Amino acid sequence: MSRAAPTLYTERLVLRGWRDSDLAPFAALNADPAVMEFMPRRLDRAESDALAGRIGAHFGERGFGLWAVEVAGGAPFIGFVGLSVPRFETDFTPCVEIGWRLARDHWGQGYATEAGRVALEFGFGRLGLAEIVSFTTAGNARSRTVMQRLGMTRDPADDFDHPTLAEADPLRPHVLYRIAAPG
Image (cartoon, rainbow, N blue to C red; front, top):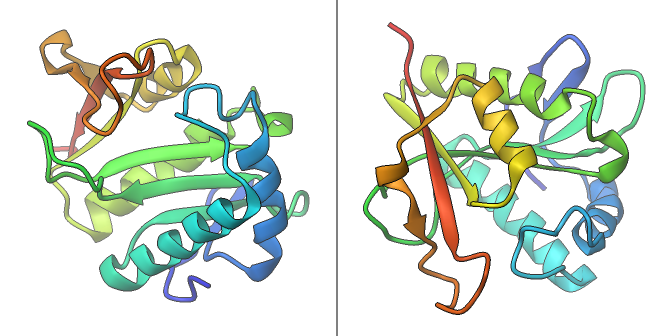
């Protein structure tokens, strides 16, 4: 699927290219109401597989993307963490975003932060990015906490209404966090 993805390692995790064996657990993750609470909707299997295909294509086109994450010596697939280029236009685009989506059984163990740190290092070191952003709906406290643990900061003046969501959608108000390259 995403054979072009470089493999990154942390103390407990492997961030790697996607495998066909990741598709079923990814579909289960995308169908979980708790995991998808702050997304517009849950995905069915076909939509989930299509998303995995887009993730693989992103690696092929850009040399970076949303890595499949496994626990070293443990769970072979727990979700994704990585870098992507948003497909919508707003005041802060074009940009590179860091994001994550992990299976509920793996929440609360610091995996998103741990994997996020190595993804940021890749973005700043290997890609030479000057800034990386992250955003979520205003009520997503768990993701906002990860952003803060990664050293990202928010200026309320940067908050925005997500342009792909309807005006009446309660998920439309988003917060934007940023982090600049070290040094």
